[in-house]
Length: 428
Ligand code: PGA
Ligand code: ZN
Image 1 (tube, rainbow, N blue to C red):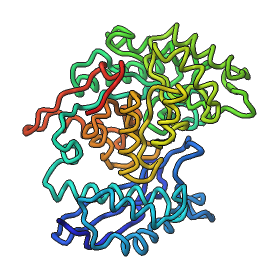
Image 2 (cartoon, rainbow, N blue to C red; image 1 turned 60 degrees about the vertical axis):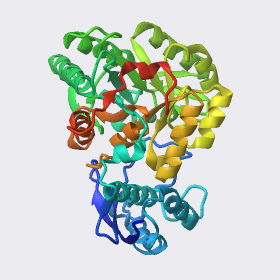
Image 3 (cartoon, protein in one colour; image 1 turned 135 degrees about the vertical axis):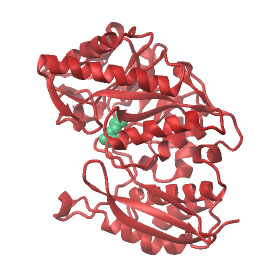
Image 4 (cartoon, rainbow, N blue to C red; image 1 turned 180 degrees about the vertical axis):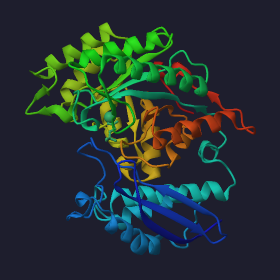
């Protein structure tokens, strides 16, 4: 047994230049572990509460209260606990917070602590984190979803759709998936440069899309796949995150770019048309988080054909996933540890999804850091898929590069999940 000797939190800075929480756990034997909280911009209404200080500094986004909570209450409560009992540590955190949405201590403080405990335990076992999590089960490296254009809340709402991504469905390895995506990303940039529509990059490193219509982004994406020398839908396919909650109000979907307002059926019909016209294999939050009937109807219509991912709708919550599976809403779930607040609850969401036959995609947030924990979670829990943002900026590349390290490590031969995971059931 290895006991926790001390816990220290500090304020560090994320990829948007905003404050975030880093936690370090020190064990009695000198081993340490570290975790950093990421931050979302298009958050689900039912996510765990991100504790921010308010006031004037950094637009009210400082995290000094969250940091102080770790250094006092949390450190006191976890000192002396067995680091290998993640569940006990997480239950203590949940109990200590005492609110249904973790608003007293903050889901940001909790997840950074929970991740730090996990890293300390893996370090203590002298194992890479993914292998510590796999517990002897055979697991695979995830297939990546990688953003080419960023829109929605990540690009000043320049286009309505938030993420235009690719999945290298023809790739035989993690490294090959990255190589193929690198070419598509580069060609998309060249095409936009040629047309004078290259405006820099959005929050997750994707090209800032100066398009006149949502369909222009889809057309350009297909063009970029072809220009890179790949067959759309075969070698490289499209994944979308509509993030529809962002432009839904009073039962209507308001598309700023196309200057149209559609009801749930009308918006679903537009998406179904896109599914017919473009090589799309995955679509996230196609309808708003509180348009459950719309999600059920859409899953009935398109669920056999494509992966339908719940992000804002499911918020990494095992109970919500079970409920959605029973209702027939979505067939896959985005897994973001900071949406729920602890590693134990995140793992419960993965297990609930796998038991329900839902596919799982472990995901970063739009506000990120050099922390690469999610790559290990996706691999060790055999999630099958990983979403990190685009193929630029070091907070994104840190994750992709970590995947390469896992694939090429000399002591373990990890195989690659590949496109088979898009077809269905997963787990161990
Ligand atoms: P967020 O968005 O991290 O800004 O909330 C990411 C997503 O919607 O998948
Ligand atoms: Zn999303």
